[in-house]
Length: 252
Image 1 (spheres, rainbow, N blue to C red):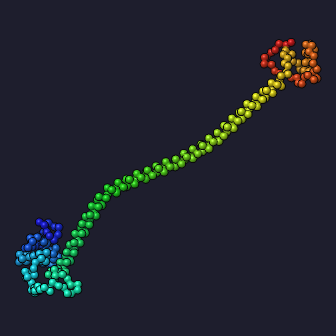
Image 2 (image 1 turned 60 degrees about the horizontal axis):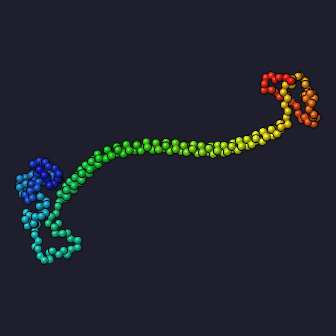
Image 3 (image 1 turned 60 degrees about the vertical axis):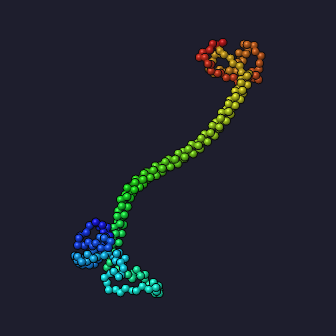
C-alpha cells in the first residue's frame, strides 16, 4: 500500500485515512503529529478529505460557517497593497500541520543525505586505497630517481676528472715525443762526434800487459820496431789500454 504523506508502505488500520475525493491513503500521525487520539471515529474516516482536495474544494461545498463573498466585477481588483491572493484566503493550514510537514521534509532530506553520504564513502573507499597504492609507488619511484640522479652526478664528475687527466696525458705525450726527438738528435750528433773523434785512433793488439808499465815508452818501442816515422810528443794525444772482448789474445 502506498501513502501520499510519506514513503512508508505499511500502517496500522486505526492510523490510516482514505481520502473520499482522490482515494489516496494517509497516516493520521503524519498529518497531525501533535494529536493525542489513539483511535479515529468511523464518521471521520467516512467523510474525511485530504488537505490537497480541501484546497481545491469550493467554499460553498464545505461544512463550515464561514460566509461566502458574492463575486462582483470589482471584487477581482485588489485595492490593498500587498494583499494575499484569493487562493490563500480559501485555505489556511494550521500551525500543527505546517510543523508536521516541515518535520517530515526535514527527516526525508536527512535520510537522503545520510544515504548519499554512506554511498559516497562506500564508493570512495576503493579509490582511496588505490590512491594510497599509487602514492607508495610514486614514493618508490621518487627514491629510485633520486638515487639515479646522484649516480648520474657522480658519473659526470668522474667523466670530467677523466677528461682533465686525458688532457694532461695528451700534453705529456706531446712533451715526451718532443723529448724523444731531441734525444735521437743528440745521440745522432754525439755518434757523429765520436766517429770523428775516433777517426785518427790506432788500435794495437797482442802487447803483453805488465805491472807499472809506461805506455808511451812501450809505444815508442813498437814504432821503432816497425820503422814508423812520427813524433811521439806531437802526434800522440792519449794512450790507454782497453779491455779485450776475447778472454785471451795472442801476444806479438
